Length: 209
Image 1 (cartoon, helix red, strand yellow):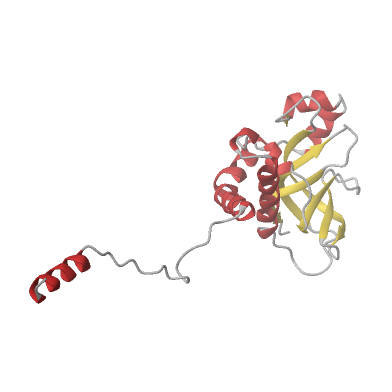
Image 2: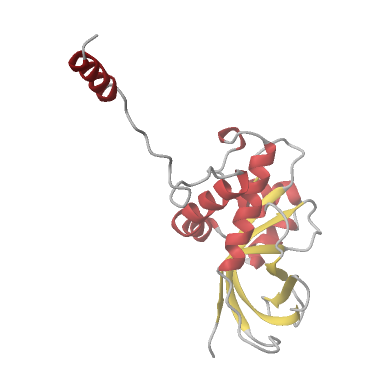
């Protein structure tokens, strides 16, 4: 083989090669896990879809209590959402305002009780977080359907992400809240007509005197 032919073959081999650089570890995003994906979904739907959904369908506390006097199922059929089996609890959307008669701001599962009818007794309890329990927001939103998700684990992480999104939107004044009036919208889950009404808020706003 001549030196010229050897050079041509070597150059031909080089033109057939494609150099692919290693991805930059600082710019390559790692795949999101279930919790991250559900947090992203919650952030996308909370303000644009969930808040107006609750506002459009909510009833006030007096109306719900009047319906509950006729039994849980009667109240549920009139005002509630039960997304799965007949044995599942009813979920209700509420919008009202009330004066704080008690609060616990020391616990990580902080709450406040609101008197909505002026009798000096707490009618509803609003969860303040940062730990917010339950699946009320997820289960009261009938556009969130279990079969649209991979499995129960993913669906449970969505409920947690919605609760976290609710907490992120709560702003409270400093000091003792007793006597402060708040407007609220949110969801509650009831398993019996006599259950306490415990709300996960989609809106919580102080009413200025």
